[in-house]
Amino acid sequence: MTTPSLARLLESLRRAAGVACPETYAVPNLWRGGGTGSSLVNPPEYYAGIIEGILSTPEAEAIRPGSAPGWTSEAVVYNLFVRLGAAFDHNGDGSIGIEPVAGGFRETGTLLKAIAMLPYMRRLGANTVYLLPLTSIGMHNRKGLLGSPYAVKNPTELDPMLGEPALGLPLETQLEAFVEAAHRLGMRVVFEFVFRTASVDSDWAVEHPDWFYWLREEPDAAPYGPPGFGQETLAEIYEKVDKHDLRDLPAPDGAYRNRFTGPPVSVEVSDGALTGTTADGARCHVASAFSDWPPDDQQPPWTDVAYLKMHRHPGFNYIAYNTIRMYDEALDRPETRNEPLWEEIAGIIPRCQERYAIDGAMIDMGHALPPALKAEIVSRAREARPDFTFWDENFDPSPKLKEEGFDAVFGSLPFVIHDVQYIKGLLNFLNRNGVAIPFFATGENHNTPRVCHGLAGQEAGRRRSLFLFTLGAILPAMPFIHSGMELCEWHPVNLGLNFTDEDRQRFPAESLPLFAPGAYDWAGGNGLDPLCPEIRRVLDIRARYLDLVRCGDQGSIAQPYISDPAILCVMRKSGEKSLIFAGNSNLHDRVSATMEFGQASMELDELIGGRKLQVAEHRLALDFEPGQCILFELPRQAAE
Image 1 (tube, one colour):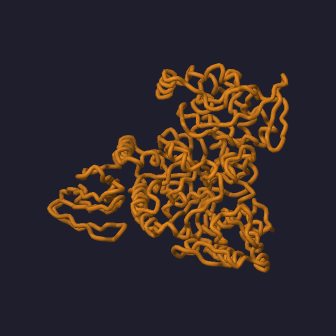
Image 2 (cartoon, rainbow, N blue to C red):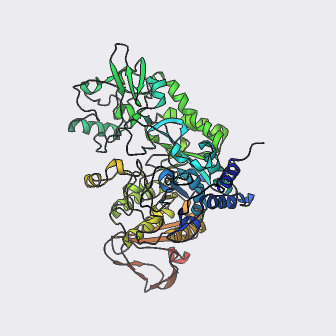
Image 3 (tube, rainbow, N blue to C red):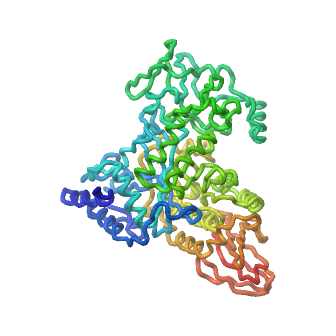
C-alpha cells in the first residue's frame, strides 16, 4: 500500500530532526496563531508538529473531491505565490537568500512552508487556496534572479526552488502533500495554468518549433517590440473590436510582418539559448512577447516569455493583437488550428487532476485563448470531475462565460478602486445588468498596485484595505485575499496594470518579487496591526447573510443617497434582510455625512466594530476617518 504523501513528509521531518539544525531559525508568530514578531524554532520539529495537527483533524471536516458541485459560490480564496508568500528571513540576516540555510531549509517560499501556513489561512476564514504557477521556469533572458513563473519551461515539471532540500523527497510528493493537507483541513486547491505562453527557451520549442513564432536574425534590424499603429489605424482597431467586427482587422505593416519566419527545420541549444535554422539556411530565434491589448499598451516587454502559436495560417505568421487575442475571422477557423498543440494543452489539467487531486483551475490569459480550445479544456477536465471549477482571467461576469462552463472571473474591481466615481459606475452597471457568475472581490492582485500603494505604513492604507475587502464581501462576488493584503503590504509584486512611469523608475523589473527573492512583512515591522481579526469578522458576517450576498439579480445592488459624494454607500437587499455598507473613499480627510430613513428613530448595530448607531429625526449622522467603513443591518420596516 502506498504511503500518503503527507505521512511521507512527516517521516522525512522526523528523520531530519536527528540531524544538526540551525539554532537561529525563526518563523512568524502569525503562522503559529500569534500576533506580530517571530519566534525561534527547531525547523523539523516545528513543521512535523503542524503536520501532526493536520493529520489529526477530524475526517468529517475533510474535502472529498466530487462531493460538492457548484462550490465556487461559497469559496473564500487565499491567493498565494508560494515563492514569495511563504518566504521569510529565517536566519535574521536582513535578506532572503536563495541557498538553503543550515539544515537544508530554504528562506524563499516552499511547498512545506505553504503547508505550515494552511492553518493560518483557515483561521483567517479562507476555504480555498489559489496558487500561482508552480511549473519550471526558463533560464534564457530570465527576469531577476529567480525568473517569472509565467515563463514556463516545461508545464509537466515543477520549479525546483519550491522544494526543501532537507526533506529528500521528490517535488511531486511535496505538492501532493500540500493538496492532501488542504483537503484534510476542509480547504480546496486551485492551480493557475499558463496555456497561452511559454518561456523563450521552452522544451516545447526544441521538440515542436511550429508551436512558436520565430524571428529572423538580422544584424542591422531595428530593436524588436510591439508593432506600431498610427492614430487613424488605432481608432479603426478600437471601433471594430468594440463592435465585435473581427473581419479584416488592420494588420501591422509589411516591414514588421516580414521579420517573422516560418518554423525552423532544426533547433540548437547553446548556453541555454535556442537558435533555429530555416529550410533556406536562415538563422532565427523564438520571438519574445509583449502586452497585445490595447494595441498601444505601454507595459514593458516580456523578454523571457513567448506566445504559443495557436493557428497555422501563412497570412498571419506574426505577433499582434489580431493573432494573439482579437483573432481575425480569417485566422480562427477549424482548418487553421494547430491541432497537436491544442491536444497537448487540453491534456494538462486532466494529468494534474489525476496526480494531485486539485479542485479547480484559474486560466491565465483565458481571454486570449481560442474559444474552441477553451471549451475543450473545460470539457476534458469535467469528464472526470463534474465539480471541477474553472476561473477565467476575464473582466466581465457575463452570462456568456457561465455558458462556456466558467464558475468565476477576475472581474474589474481592481481597475476602478482609484476613484469612488468609477466604483459607483461599476456597481451601477452590475445592478443594471445583474451578475451571472461571481468575480474576485479584491482591490489588488499580483499584476496591479497594492491597495496600500502610496500609503506605506499609514493607518489610512490599513482602513482602505478593510474598506475594499468589506465592500467585496457583501457583493455577489468571491472574497479574495491576495497574500500580503492582510499585512497592509504596499510593495508591488509586478508592474503589470495601472502603474505609472514613476513607478517603473522606482521599481526596476529585475528587483520585483515576481522575479527576484522577496518576502512579506510577516513580523509586523511596518508598525500597522495585521487585518486578520477584522477580515475574519467580515467573513463571519458574510456567512450569516450568505443568501443575500450571493444574489446577483438585477436591482440587487442599490446605492442609497448619502449627503457627501466621497462616501460610498451600498445596500444589499434580498427577502426580509438588508445590509448597508458605507465608507469614506477620501484617504486624507475626515468626512461627515448623513443618511435619511423613513423611520424616525432606531438603534442599529454596526457589525464590524460592534458599536451602536443612532437614528434620530429620520437621520443617521456619520463621521468617518480617512478610508473608514461601517456595515450594518437595516430592520425590515426601515428598509421598506
